[in-house]
Length: 247
Length: 98
Image (cartoon, rainbow over all chains, first blue to last red; front, side):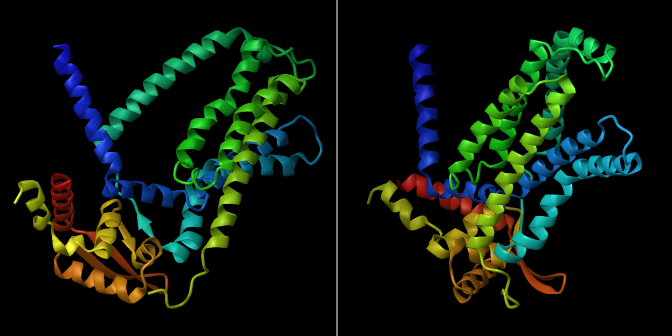
């Protein structure tokens, strides 16, 4: 029985090694690398964080220029929500496709599988969210019951939650830069800064929950945006502008 | 002659040519792409790439569609089911031979 299992594991391992050494299999990574060649997704993610952070700064109490601030707040929130959808499309259409070509990707998964995956992700994230909210509920009540003039001291649980924002965004960053992180090793350094930055801000910046979350989101936005802008700059430097007779 | 060695002679010669293998392998990973993308990825010149694409189209392995992006002409390329099957068969034969 054990011998049979060992042989089976060895066979699967050999198949994986063979697939890894197969030059035709290596091509499967090319479209993934091409998707992140211009940093469009990082820029859009950074813009979203920056818009939401700036909107939260505009929402600070005060009477100066309140009409402009309300208008700016609404525009920034709308911009933040729409940025991940429209910025990559615009960069691809006006910069990437004319320079290095158009690509449409096929769906890696069937729709039914995507629905199942979405439902599983929804259930898992709901359970985790409920557990976190249950854990920090006393702290949320304390924040809600105090006025803005006399905010409560932030608890360790809330600090921990804020500090983990960078850690939570790290998998998303890795997913979006999986194709370009080998080409740009500085992205590993940025990833470390992305994880450590929010921890440093949370534990060093004085103030209540809202006063600390604003610089954390702003920091993450700047990190994402800088990464995308540097990638786009490098892409523009290494590719030629479009010529009238491309084909 | 050994069966394993003989498998090499069963390779699809149309796909086996390095330039065409690059094209088919790249097209197999995407839904569709344009001429410029293949030019950029393969590093071939326009004449070579065009020649290979014509041969693959004649064999029914790829579809070529002439269209426009705004006012700029664009050539969109797709791998056909026959092309997909041919690449799969080629990979199987190659694995059997080595």
